[in-house]
Image (cartoon, rainbow, N blue to C red):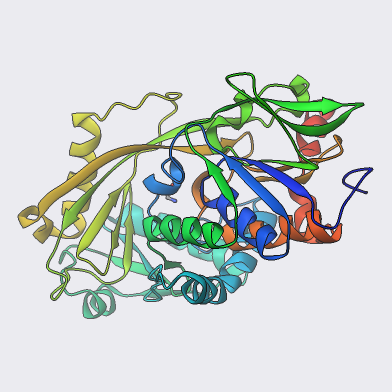
Length: 386
Ligand code: GLY
């Protein structure tokens, strides 16, 4: 399908949303000559991109029935090393891709049974996972509690520093002539004769474009100008997190560690992120004592010596969760409008593949088959089948 009846070689592209998805798409497009303008309702990269933990958890997050999403995550993971190297080359900013892997730790016998069940699913999907006994786990991570009952090692579930990623992408787009309009909310998508032709800002200003990319994360559903069934069904999924400080010269942990109700993500600068709640509370941004208590208690059961660490920061973010927890990607029925939203828990992981495939769609008119399961049409089809 042609994206737009008057497709041009150097299209004017308006991107709604300056999170990592919007920025990375903008970068890919601008390096190939597109004229890119990005709008954000707040500061660039300060939504879920800033709040995230940067886990590239293609293996760990595999759930039954999510084979297409697992494949997309694995394909994106395979691009991450080159993506990070390219960003370093383009900006001199290192996003600190770390490859120690992720340990999913069992504490009780029940956890162990559940983990074994999950391990069988992961193995059925041919994912690179292995069971480690308690002593093998503690050999790798000596500060883990003596009570742990073993762990699954997801050796390819790496991590990056998502805040450095935002900084790097901002710099990369800047160097390629992209304009980012911060604190300029898009009210609606402009259309003419059934095709998207630009955006209307909250103050009424109209900006015309050949292509509009909807990458507004948890705010995507609120963008007007679309019929109800073509608004992406994305909702905010609240997450509360905190960061502790450990001695970077003697880190307590080196892997990403997951356990029931909590994950810990060590950074090179000594930060260790402790996350995250999963709450259906709309855009509520309150930090609660109960959430911090639960996260810290769960983390302390895994790594008791965190009790000595200084608390650096506590925050709230809103994951863009779609109705089936998978992203919404590609062209829909409206010519000129591209979706790149709903990345839920996997936005950082899926950034490279989203950027590459959306750029190829816009500039080469090539719809990679990997996009096929993620079109917005799937929700209309699901509705019709009900
Ligand atoms: N990807 C981790 C989270 O959503 O909390």
